[in-house]
Structure formats: C-alpha cells, structure tokens
Length: 261
Image 1 (cartoon, helix red, strand yellow):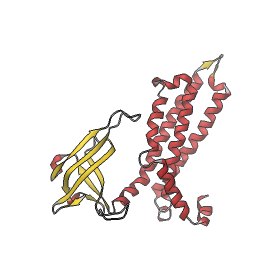
Image 2 (cartoon, helix red, strand yellow):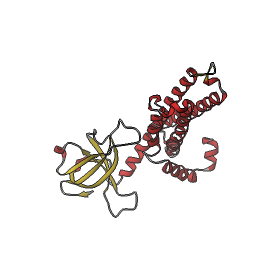
Image 3 (cartoon, rainbow, N blue to C red):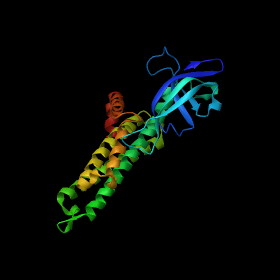
Image 4 (tube, one colour):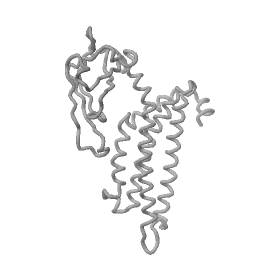
C-alpha cells in the first residue's frame, strides 16, 4: 500500500477470499510500511466493489471453483491493479492493522468452532436415527454393542466440545479486563480442538451407516467434506497450538493452578 496525496494505492493478490463474488465491501490488511519488522506496519483499509468508489486502477475478482466442501459458498481471489482508494477508507489506526484483525479473530475462532460443532451434531443425529431404525436379525442395530457403544462415546465427545465452545463464547461475551490476556488461550483451544474432534465424530458416524455412509444421500459424507476446511481457515490448527503454547509459557503457574484448573 502506497500513500499518495489524495489516497492509497493497492497492488497485489489475496487468494482464498470467502464470498468474494458476492461481497460489496472488503476489509484489506495491507503492508503500509515496507521497512517495518515482521507483523508490524500493517493497515486495514476498506475497498468497495463499486468502481465508482475508486479514484483509479482496477479490482479483478476471480472465482476459484471445484472445492472439496462448502460448495454453496463462493471462494475467489482478489487482484488489485494500481487500485487507488480515498484516505478516509482507513479502518482503525494506521500501522496497527494486524492488532485490529487479531481482535476480530478471538470472536471468529469461536464461530468457526461452532461451525464444526454443528457439522458433528448433524452427523450424530443422522447416525443415531439410522441406528434406531435400521434392523438386522430382528432388532435395531443400536442394540449391537459395537454400534451402541460407538454412539455412546460419540455423545460424550460431542457434549464435551459443545460446552467447551459455549464456555469460550461466554468468556468472549464477558470481555472483562482480567480475562483479556487469557482469552486467546481459550479461543485458540476451541479453534483447534473442536474441528479436530468433529472430524473424528463425523468419521465414526459414517461407520455407523456402513456402506451407505459413503453415498451422498445420507448427507454425512458432505459434513465430513465441509468440516475439513474448518481446520484451515481463520488460522490453521498448528497456528492455534502455537498461540496456546506462547501463552502457557508466560502465565504464572500459581494463576494456572488456582484460576484455570
């Protein structure tokens, strides 16, 4: 991002932009100071799709098709060609753009975890209903321990991630000064743990269906495909684990013992 007398000029590409084809507005995190240290000197700026809002240049939006899952959403790339936008489009403080984005991520990580939770809940309900209605040897297959015990374990796993997600959401909603430092510990926890657990739950529900689970009509394989991206966007599982370790290294041991455990 280069400052001019009447605006800022953007050049570059942003790949994997959700709903790129539908959005009317984009919040762009751009490098404002090329000499700043890594992670510094970034600024968030508003870019509208409407060409009437540009001072010069162009914005190219290219759809990226053929996704594994979440096929009802648009995924695309944004290409900025000498795109100049007014100075009033700056969002927040110049040079503090990464902080602006990270503050948003504490909330969005919880929302992404809830997406995985919903995938797992839907798959579990499908599997439970199938196990109660599907009959073999004159009894429903839920009465066979291999199936019944599997569903019992899935229920326990599902409830554990459900209330973990709710607790992180409650913490984010409270946002008191005391908890601000540890909030990312919990939001990163649900962002890595809930999607990973949901993947295991959905995989097990496919097994409950047997061969039928592999076919589209049961709708559990779709949930498996849709859930895979949840481990990637808004920060990969590995990024969340890095965040957690960074915080755990700094927290006072007595505080962990008395307040978190």
